[in-house]
Image 1 (cartoon, helix red, strand yellow):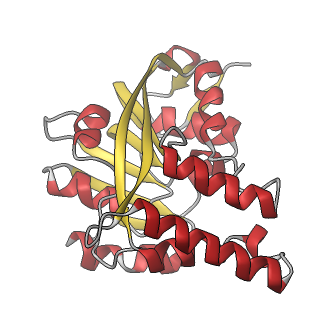
Image 2 (cartoon, one colour):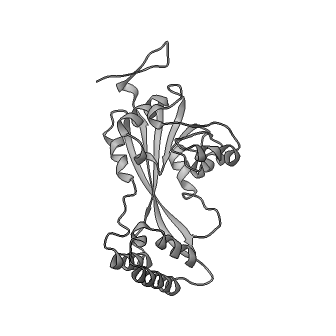
Image 3 (cartoon, one colour):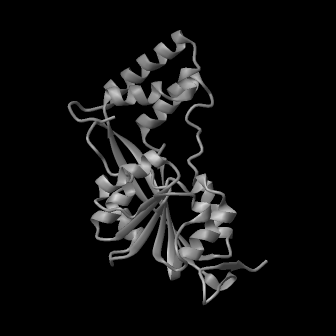
Length: 250
């Protein structure tokens, strides 16, 4: 992969997910903060939470703020009705949906939104189809992974969110010959192959790159940024006026 830092999504994604007006945003499962940084650069007040200390530790330097905590999305350490938007970038599938969606709804202001994004591989490009064919010759189950997008089904079924919308954005990611070989070699399915089969696969992938790329430009690995947004509906939640407590009607 190219060593040049890249954006996790096309530049149009944050605007569609969050909007252009300054907003208070909570990025859940923020990881290394790549998407939070995109939001911060657009003038939003960005809070971030992740369960991994190592991820959160780099955020003050990356974003220049200290609005970030280590914690569980299923038990958010924030007041009710505190955020305009909650974002989940490549992370919604990691949370327990019944608990996490209730907590996300609680911390959103009336009329606030949950916005979700996932990068999925676009297999319609011819050289990518040939790459998949090579890998599946060695391992029929290769490159059939679950991206996590099924987690959005829980949002559609939740009583706490309405008006779910989806929009897709094409996301081209430059990749060098070395980067493609490393990507293939590091896949668990490749590691399980016999050494001779693995060596032949890597040779074939290198030949595919050489025949597809137009030197000195790298190949562009096509992804699709799939984005969703939904509006919170507090009618199923009851917040007591005199304390920060949540009652769930069963």
